[in-house]
Amino acid sequence: MTKFEDKILEWLKSKRIIIGFIFVTVLNLFLRKIAVWWTVEGVVSYYDGHDHMVQGMLWWLLMRAGMLFPILPVHFMKWVAAAGDFAMAACGALALRKLAGDSEKSAERSLVFYAVALIMPFTLLRGIVWSMTDSFGIACFLWAYSFGRKKDLLRIVFYALGMLFSPALVLVLFAESALAGFRRSHGKEKTGPKTGFAIVLFSVCLTALTSGFLGVINGFGFLTGIFGQVNFLSYDALTGLSFESGIPWLIQMLWLYCLPAGVWGLFRLFSAHIADEKRAQ
Image (tube, rainbow, N blue to C red):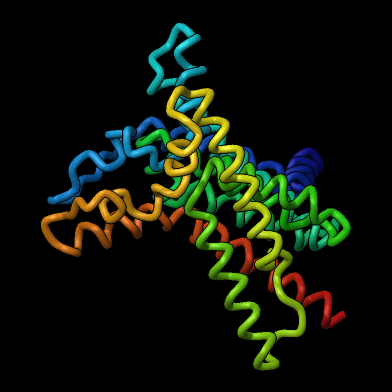
């Protein structure tokens, strides 16, 4: 092997993390050219009839902003959702790097998270197919998680912004906080995640007020704006409508929560490993 080839291999080895990020990014952009339409018998335009306001008032405001550009609003929202997907993966990778410190293992862990978060079918379906903006909200949550305890106020703002983009994260965080409290009460965990009921509750209140004002801006009214933010629980249950059977409704709920629960769970798994490594040191 020549010296030139040795230098090329050495350079590739030193830049393999950066090359990995570039490869995953290009691959994801290619996958976004594939239109995958998924339907289930008994589900009638749940994600297409946006009068359900499953995304809340901030989604409507972004859609209205898209009308100002010489592009179809649905295409505009697809690109916005795509940007959110990359922001979600990048914020999670940066947050993990911030938690673990600057090391080769930390960089590899961040690359794995970036790749999995982007290539998950849930990410592609909710983003590029259904034009949902959940990933922007998840990005806010992931980045805020790495804040120190002295930045609780800033974390509340980020969590509220995250809930405006991805309302389903409310229940995900409450469930995580409840589980952490249960583990602490049984002595299985000394320190819980940096969410906590108080922080989540303040974030929910701030989200409700903001969504109400956004409802006024969008012309729906204050109370309608707040209602639109909680509509994600199940529009059909709240309005008295129902599916032909319980299975389509269950599938609907799984697809509604799979992205925030999946990405947040993946991040918490990685961050838990980082915490264990620090305690071992």
